[in-house]
Image 1: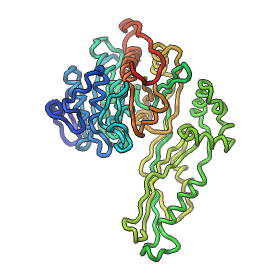
Image 2: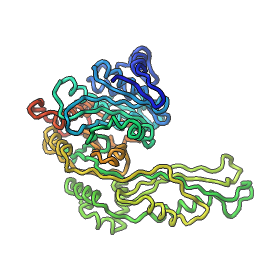
Image 3: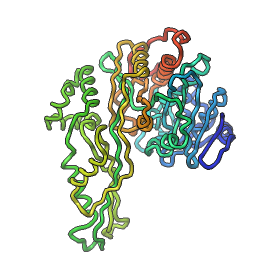
Image 4: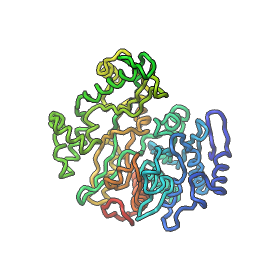
Length: 488
């Protein structure tokens, strides 16, 4: 089964060959010997190597990381397959076969968002180890989680324990750009990879410390992305003699109307539950205890927007202006201009109704709305064996900890599975500080070695709980001290 597959050809030897080349010569962005820092434990050393593989999207280059994983699976004797929908845009799937219970997928994405080295303390592709932390793009989103999955997957394979369900490792391309060449391609073209699967563990939730208690959020639903382009047309001409109207002016006025008149706030049930859970767990979150009262007071909602934009985003539909384009020359009034909006809709929002409302708000006939990306909302129930296993394992590993279902403003590849009726949770065993969470898509992204090492062990405990018969499990894993970050 150790094959590499793309939609136009089958080449069984390509990934092993790539892995061999990777071992013989330094890849772009890799350490000269590719071995990682010898001071680090194996899992953290692997993460350092993984960070050093440049999978910035665009262009992605995920196939280089696929070779990294393929080499590991070759050495471990674990069957795997790969796909490459476009050159360089690879994903990899490996399976430990089990019994008839619905299978579980450990999912993470290989690609990372761009990083500007000018604003980082360390080179974003260096994987620098300093003061107990590994630094680099993808440390949290989601190469760190991927290595936790990998090490738990390998340990489960080495244990030889009979499994009650299939356990699948899946590392995919293109999540940061919407997943068209990753999970989106897989569900359309390789449904056999998902055969018998009933649950997915993915990114989207993690732990944090509230006082002396660790609180784990498990993402069960998310705001729905809708990426739009507003296309404006108008009279063009010379910059020395502008007309009263133009495409650019119409576009600016429309965007200002959206800024001045945000979408009405409302609390959907999942967000209401999330806010009330946060209020019960955090002494400084009392204002979240009554979400309806919160959104009814404009000054309180504005304060939430200033202090916690992420929570504020869960109270309404939002649109962020992210790209603008008009004339390519300073002295030409462009006859066409566009702006791109990253809109995120509440889980119960009908996309067509949202577009209709947006048109009314823009109120400008010269502007058309083009939908670039849109998804279907879906929610995963918490009444499952997997959710209960997360509660059980985190309680053992982090005594006194709490698990709460969460809603996220971002989107992940979990949506592809939820659309097909497969339970998908966003869960990471990492316990993060607020400062470290800010590295996701920001500067100086990092993860502590402590989080990597205890994270994969927690993930292994979870896999044994959900996939191994009770009488064949290991006994008594030690608990962890509830701290965030830092060294072992």
